[in-house]
Length: 125
Image 1 (tube, helix red, strand yellow):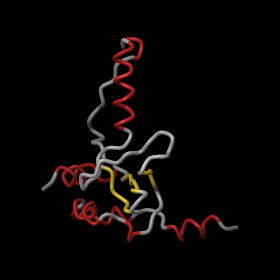
Image 2 (cartoon, helix red, strand yellow):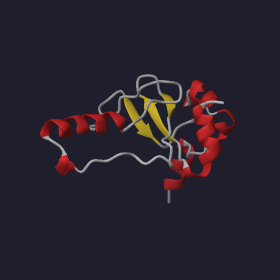
Image 3 (cartoon, helix red, strand yellow):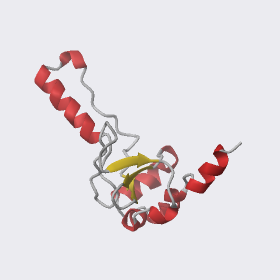
């Protein structure tokens, strides 16, 4: 069993899957979820030197989107001009098959999102 399957077995209802679309291909990947039982380490900003603060900011920017289940390392830029974008709505056919397989028995979770047609219909008066 993989780490992701073990994590979802243990914390399924507490984990909301996130998705990122690779703009050039249109492929949507599943972002590797964080373990909700692990507390991240934080250091007060006042305790950091300027150099440490710069490194912390760079690391934060890199960690906004974790690698995907298939191993792709998305590049989501803060100004939204990068090759990848965070998405909530996409067609099922755009989902990366490797990310889908990595979910194993939790694969149905990748399809619990609004479809483009559902969103357009919901927005109409």
